[in-house]
Amino acid sequence: MDDVKPLAAAPSEQIPDTPREPMVVMDGVNKHFGDLHVLRDINLTVGKGEVVVVLGPSGSGKSTLCRAINRLETIESGTISIDGKTLPEEGKPLAQLRADVGMVFQSFNLFAHKTIRENVTLGPVKVRKKSKSDADQQANDLLKRVGVEAQADKYPAQLSGGQQQRVAIARSLAMGPKVMLFDEPTSALDPEMVNEVLDVMVGLAKEGMTMIVVTHEMGFARKAADRVVFMADGQIVEIGTPQEFFTHPKSDRAKDFLGKILTH
Amino acid sequence: MLDIIDKYDILGAFWMTIRLAFFSAIGALLIGTVLAVMRVSPVAILRRLGAFYVNTVRNTPLTLLVFFAIAGPYYILQISLTPVNSPTALVDNGIRWAIVALAVYHAAFVCEALRSGVNTVPLGQAEAARSIGLTFGQSLREVILPQAFRGSIAPLGSVLIALIKNTTVASVIGVAEASLLMSEIIENETASVSVFLLFAMGFVILTLPFGVFFTSLSRRLAVKR
Image (tube, rainbow over all chains, first blue to last red; front, side):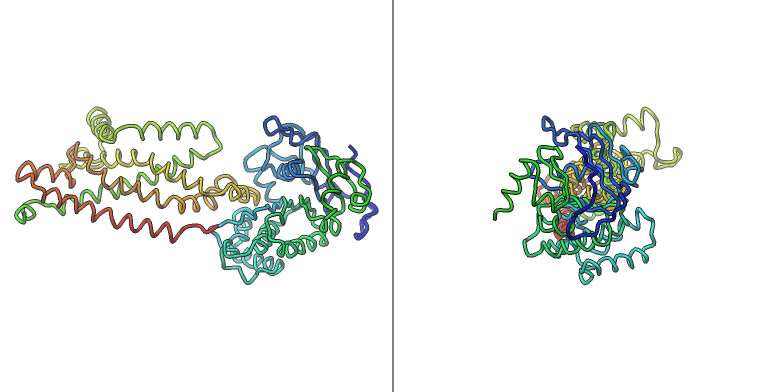
């Protein structure tokens, strides 16, 4: 499958003509869960500053793909590299590489015993070796940016889901990541909180953050994605601009999927 | 009854019980934490060693361990935990080896209490810790263990209460703690219910506040999710 499509013709976004430098490269990646072949020969290149939305029915392997990129899931064959560096197996080098890859989870996963501010400063202080005061300053700025600065001294359980998820985004941003992974960031949220999180993500996309987003939010895909990757049964079935994908899906699987979700 | 209380140093005996419990609790918490870290570590050999320790020690009667501590290392191998020439070497070695045995024994239970605490920490916490670039050690120190300790306060309380009562086993190697004094009084004076009740009360006074304290602590420190 030809995954490095020319990036022209996305409707709402200005796409630069020069081809992007690759940020995340997955080459021949395979993984099984027992008998289930959950990633089949995945080849995908995500360029610097590109926003790629991964869509697909549940069980199609899209979360696994996302989690494999910072090795929360190990892979059996193939290689994954980030900004030219192949993902190390274990230990310190892997930790260092993960520091450059932001991850936002479906269930937020804020550190339950730490305040909101401590959640954001932990990585910068322990991994980036920033001073406490610098890290606090940065945390305040980031919390203001995602609109939860008033909650800085509370604990995660005292915040709404939408607020927690925005803190989780701030926590990732505090590491100055090269790429951000979003694993169904709005799936655990009450409907009225989805937009506050998506707004932050759209803002990030506009600022040129490299993003890989697994989501069911078609609106976000249309608004912010440079490319849409459609997965089914562990394979990448189709890659295209949101315009192409939503109006003229090529594969039957994609037509079937879109038919099911867009009729309501 | 009053003459018994006058004649025997009951408070002194309970003071020995408290000292035994205090020092072996510290030892058990230290060894137990190390064991718990081994048992959740990604290194298979450490996990197996930790499991071997827990399964061996937990299934050995404490009386055997205490007796072994004084008979093996001290009498046979002559490993003295005090200066050899000290006039109280025999008594002090008895106390110290009893503390070692109590610590070693209860470490296995501390380990399991902590491990049950680790299991209260959702997997996502470890994943989030790793994904901001913390190493395994940092994730444990900063994220997993602080939450695991809070989740294991209640079971740890039970272990410590058991430890306080298990100090009575040190009497088999002649450590002059409360239960040894009770046997002495029963032998020398009377085997009346009042003597038994006196010592039982002593242990209740030691352990009951512990239970209340740990229950309230576990409520207060519980990690809200």
